[in-house]
Image 1 (cartoon, rainbow, N blue to C red):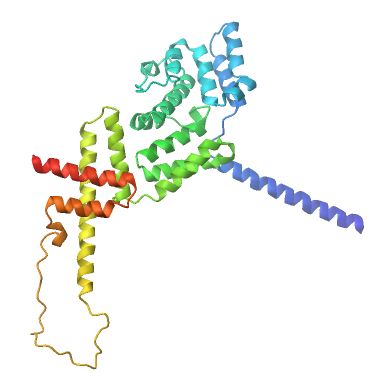
Image 2 (cartoon, rainbow, N blue to C red; image 1 turned 135 degrees about the vertical axis):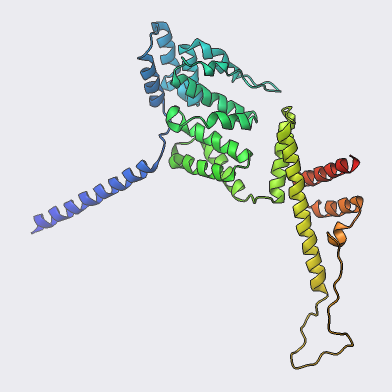
Length: 340
């Protein structure tokens, strides 16, 4: 009998263990991408080298670059892999090296080499990721979005970096839904990510979740983007369109504030306690309410520009600096329009 009980208990333990393994397998299957590793770098490179002719000296250099020791020392899988690719394909050496420069006024690297149809996909895709990362780091968000948008997680050796910089670019361009969706994918393998990715992506997630469309916060973000574009010597139609959008947003916000003020003024004339139904109201009025003309914008809207600016300055004085900047820019733009 004891033997039978032991067999039954053992069978239950085995069953529970199997269920636990299946649950872990299901969690693993949910991840839509595989984290980077030194082994993936070497396997990807070996598959590529199998299709080309390469002398032993270059192979030895590649082995050194993709060794566990060197990868751990650099701490950057993508950089190690692009260094190895530069040994394989001399055409990309100049491009890869240009990404390491940090001038005060960075200029976009020349990307013509990536247009070469003979360039192997493994080279084009991973070098494109390295360039996209550089563009994002140097505030060329539109170009980074275009380049990173062409890549899939299965195309590159470091999909975590691809997803992180996609999320960063979407955050900086106020693409709220796209940013949150990408961060969700990034978190599928959260434990494998560099700490800086998890910390920054969490901040981006919380920040953009709080953003409300057409709010003062939204206007401040757009104004910040306008300043970024101008600093990159870009003041074309898009910037003009953004400036107009900020003006329209602030006009709408001011209109809402005016309505709130009118409602507050209206409510202040009401008695604090209503008259009882059983009592007859006194007075000699004819029982008809007289309409009052507030004009298009009420008393506040009718203020001269200088007084209106003063009123808005009073409202914004306790706001964060970037909000005040938006409002000051708003009135500057209004003044310019009045002078035209």
